[in-house]
Image (cartoon, rainbow, N blue to C red; front, side, top):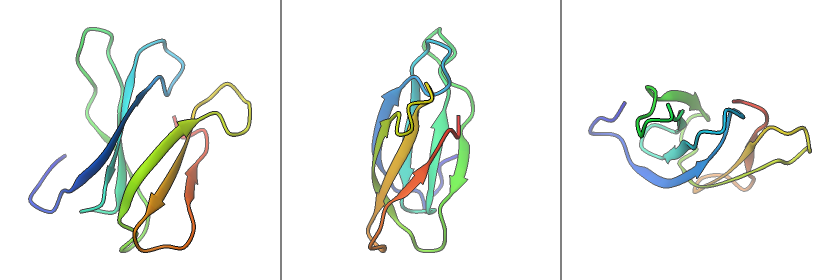
Amino acid sequence: MFNKETRPYTIALRNLNNDNQLDLAITNSGTNNILLLYGCGNGTFTNATSYPLGYNYLPYSLAITNLNQDKWMDIVIASYNADHIQTLVKMC
């Protein structure tokens, strides 16, 4: 999950998959992706699921909210090398 190119920047804690367990979302600007780790309910998390964002996107910040009012959390990502944001809608 983490190697010498890894540069985690922002971590957010939220229930992403509607199972009443807190999950982690991490921006990883070293590998241009978002990592999601789902809570198991006993203080541990699953292995990370990686969502690539594109070459040289360099994500640094994220917000988690329900953008489209469908009862599922969505992730909004800001980056260093883009003049726009990316959204991951109902990825979880």
